[in-house]
Image (spheres, one colour):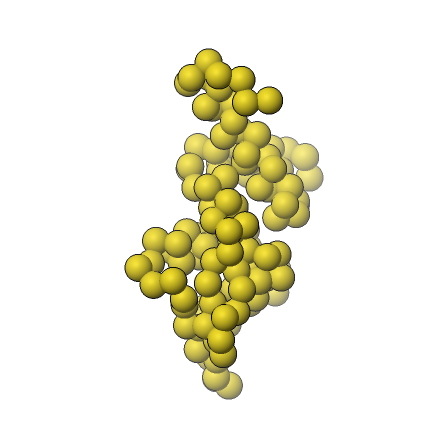
Length: 118
């Protein structure tokens, strides 16, 4: 299964907006496709250090996960990030997506405040 960056972004934002600090992801043999997709992307987020498993099928966001969400949460910033990636070949690592989004977010804040963020 290919990584779906849009899906992963939405999943992480949903996890952060939840009132719980941990999240259960049920695993069973005849899991529906959507549940398999969710579990796959949760595990990718874990691989990237954005989430950790804190028990059997219990997950929580890491500080790095919250930073990733902060970088990609703004829809305009996310659209700019995806557009640049599409223009330059259509694929990027999660870390590169995060860095691009941070760059666009910094530019937006600098324009709004006049404060250079380096």
